[in-house]
Image 1 (cartoon, rainbow, N blue to C red):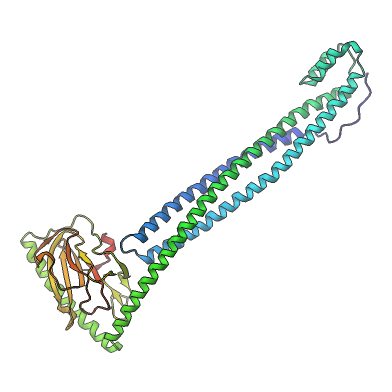
Image 2: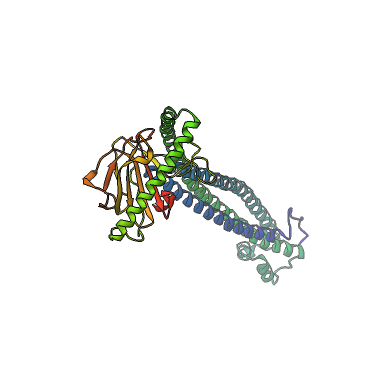
Length: 420
């Protein structure tokens, strides 16, 4: 009967359960992190697509700067969300680094503890053997399950209960060490994977930030150019109408004259329809008549020279575009020219205008052009989509060379962008 060994330090019955619980928690954390990375990747991809679309819109014809600005504001908010998610990933990498240090230390401590317990048990067994039992001793010391070997050795020696308990503890230590080691390896692998995934997300985030900043700079440039053109228009208008009374009389006169012109256009359209030159409905979409900077969009403007409409004291019934003087103006869609010439609705200083009827209810108006008849077009001429119908000018009550493009739909002016 062997004497009782000293009680091994740090022996805990639930140590293996705790190690397995750590493994299970790590697997759960890995699964959660993969979901986070996938979500972040999806956000990055959607943002990248949106930025590309916005950049294309800024490069495109007659960008709606107000709409683009709203999009950029929305994208900045998405960038902030992505930054926060990225920061969370970085924090998790740091946490995994710290966890790796802890589990490595636990593995080293357990390996050392296991070696000490094996050495203690082997010394106690060695002292109980005759010199001719060396092979059995070696078999014992190299075995994987001490409990089974001790049971076999009980035929040769009397093994004490505490020695059996120590052997059982060594078996438990081996399983615990294996669990610690697996947790260490899993943590190391996950740390490396997450670090690489985080680096990839950082590259995508940097690319999106650069693209967004470029779009912001382009928007600012276009806004500055548009503001300069608009300021020039305001100065020119101020020289035409010096006071509110004059402005009010001019607006009232123009509105009345425009109603008379619209009545004339309606009569022309009826005659053209009777001749089969204008269809009852228009199938298709319109295109921009000219490329340039949009200085005024359709809708409320706040500019005193615009007439009132509904609750809006100053309403712009079309879209103003500025391009180099003489830029070609093209038909937005196929149709019949129902008017080309001076718009005497403007009073003593009329603008040159072309009006095209695309159907019984849809017309496009092109105003302030140079007084020319490209290709000999006249009222009644059929024109195709994209055909040159005029050249940007500065006729009528114009505040600088530009094109005023409007759409008349079912009895009233409508936003041209709805038909693009």
